[in-house]
Structure formats: structure tokens, C-alpha cells
Length: 274
Image (cartoon, rainbow, N blue to C red; front, top):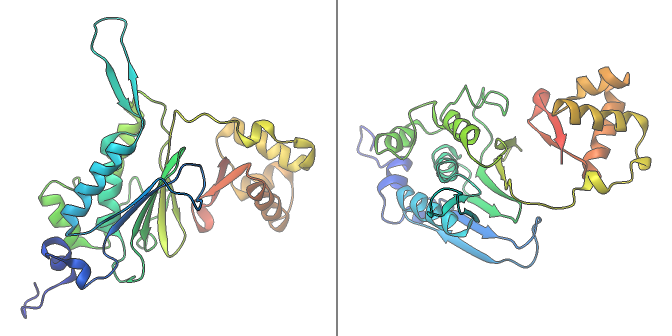
């Protein structure tokens, strides 16, 4: 509440009985798909309303109930060991981040979480706050909604300021399954964070693709990514000797063929194998 006794958006979101009455799209939707892409057929779709605490708790519980759990009987002892394919802490932290840092001034869009057979995508309205990029997000967190962040931190929903994303990486580094770091992508109107299922096995496009359809520069780039993990436009130009225009054409063609995907934004864009 402000000094002149006006109710703030943060107060409505945190303590209102029906925040959606005042901020229409202030809720979370989860959609489950049976394939790796958006299809007309869905397994389930849920909307989670209420204050932010209810939205976070209900969404967290739903994701836990619908992700795969790997069970293993150890060689020593009889107790079964269950390991979810995604760490529970990471799922919850990404839900909290989406709720705490989304742009609530974008009234026509809600938080959307899409569950595919090979990944989970967290769509949070609004791009990164000024100064934050996919490359520095681990070290340079900044809150768009400081009041929300402070209250969520005080009630233990949000990690210590600046530590939440770092703990996501630390959890993944120590996790028994070989989980990739999240892929962060700023598309201007939203930030999309993707977690890939480390157990999902499928014939990869890059393994079945006819490489004779690529030019020599593109084949060189694929080998470069295999050896170095990623490639940027400037690195592509350096190893192939082409202009910026040709590099963009070649890289966009590889993206269109489904062999690589882009991450980052602006000058921080880089490409990894699909």
C-alpha cells in the first residue's frame, strides 16, 4: 500500500483474494503435449489462479506429479532410489522466477509452461531487465519487481537476492543425471527458459542428416560446434573466411534445417547443436 493508502499491484498479487479480477492475465497456465512440438492434441491443460503463493505452490505440485522419475535398485541395500529427470529445486526456482520477475504491465499475456516429451519451456512475459543477458544471468540478476522479490524472499519462496539462478546451476552440476544448463532466450515480449530431459532418446537430426546437402563452410561449422560446444557469428567468419552477411545466411539455413539452435540475443547470440 502506498503512503496515500492506495493498493499496489504487488499487494493485490501477493495478498488479494482474486488478483485476476484486477490484473486479468496474472496467472499461470501449464500445457502438456504428447510430442516434441506444439500439436492440436494435448494431454492436459491447467490454469492456476489465486495469489502468487497459491499459483507457485499449485504449479510446483503439478509439475512434480507429471515429470518422469527414474527408479533404480542399488547393488547394496534394498531401498529403491528414485530420481526425477528434472531437479525439484530447479523446477520450483524457475516457477518463482517467472512469477517474481515477469512484466505485469503486459496485461494480455500470462505465464505459460509447456511440457513436451523432451523438455519443459517456461514463458514469462517481458524481456530481460536492462543489463541482463543470457550470458550474464548467473552473475548479474536484477529484479523488475523489487517489492514482489523482497516479500517472496522474506517468506522463503525466493532465494537470497542474486543467488537463485546461481543455485540452479550448482544443483544441475551436482545432479546424478547429466542435465544441461537451462537455455535462456529473450524474444523481446518474453523470456523463454528451456530445460531438456537428459533421459530422452531419439534419433537426432544431425545423425541422420545428409551432409552432402550442406556447403563446406556449414560442415566445418558443425565440426567446430562438436569440438567447442558452440559457435558465434564472429567465430563462423573466422574459421570460414566469409562476410557477416554470408555467415548469417549459412547459420540461418542450419537453424532452418533443424541442425542447430540459437541462444542469446543481440551481440550475445551463439549456436549449439539441436
